[in-house]
Image 1 (cartoon, rainbow, N blue to C red):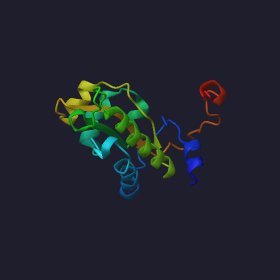
Image 2: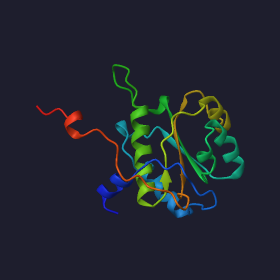
Image 3: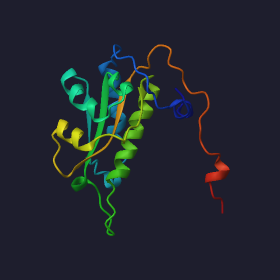
Image 4: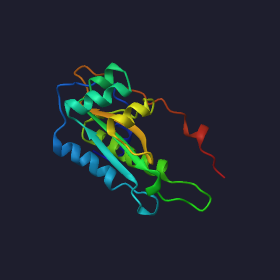
Amino acid sequence: MEFNDVILKRESVRNFDPKKLVAPEVLERILEAGRIAPSASNYQPWEFWLISTPEMLAKVKPCYERQWLADAPHILVVTGDEDQAWEREDGFNSLQSDLAIAMHQMMLAATNEGVGSCWVTHFQPAMLRQALGLKDSVKVYGISPLGYPREGFISRTVIMRKPLHDIVIYR
């Protein structure tokens, strides 16, 4: 798929076919897109959790109680360790920027593969942290279901974004 087509086609899918698993090699390509993402000083302070087993899905899905998430056959959890991230002299820690780039690259890769995703940050972090057994310095940045849209899924036809003249300042 042409890069601009991938960008334009990426959308938040909230209607998954729970019976249609994503092939391991497709999931690997999606995860690889996160692995090669840029990070400040190339510290790569991340871990990507691919939740696919029924046991782990049962522990992770309750952290965001929406039926559409319950139907997803896979859940990607993006975590990072603040202690492993680059820090600027004024105290700025690059963790959130690094994780956002990696997560976005994986979501674009999913789109390229025809796999639906949806960036979710409104989840119960304590429940998710406990399910994954994370240490205190590790932050859960976001989650995304991964799966194929259910038959009959209607893709958006109009991208609802502000026009360039409202957001770009030319000087």
